[in-house]
Image (cartoon, rainbow, N blue to C red):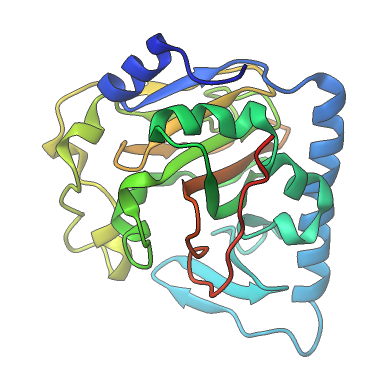
Length: 261
């Protein structure tokens, strides 16, 4: 019922992405946003405990392991917020259940031409008002470090809030996935190699401005990034990367099969 259409599959092959608008209803989004805030609250509380793991800094990014999740703190010290948390499904049943929703995973079955899937990773990306931009990059460059079947990985990004240029929606460069892994930036610190040198790419970047509840399906090599949240509200997205069945989660000895229905 929810499989990808031929038009969507053609766009995925040609442009590296496609969007389904308003997949999740307003009532469902209320619950999913509550789940996202529940996870964020748990992580902030755990990070404040005296026995919390230390914060590691690489270039201008701050990382910490909290509640079996790897978190990235916002760049600004005065903004007490987590910009990404991975994984998160184990911290809220509402997010975990979303992974098994056929409206989310069924198009991936079509893309991968299979009938079973497992979870590669799941995470929350959060931009509070004033949240920092994220440089141009490709998922494949770092997913390949630990992926057991890189070719099968398809990422889904569900907007829990509307995505606008004002609040830091994702920007993509259509067709950039056809160039494979691209050269990283030089002289940009330790992490520079993971950021894409867009001067090497032909093509114009476009924003994925969509209503809340929409889902973006994108190829691991699609070049994408985001800008600062200049609005007064949060921009929250739930990201699930699916892969072939029977494989381990990223950086884990555990497996999480998708409950196909």
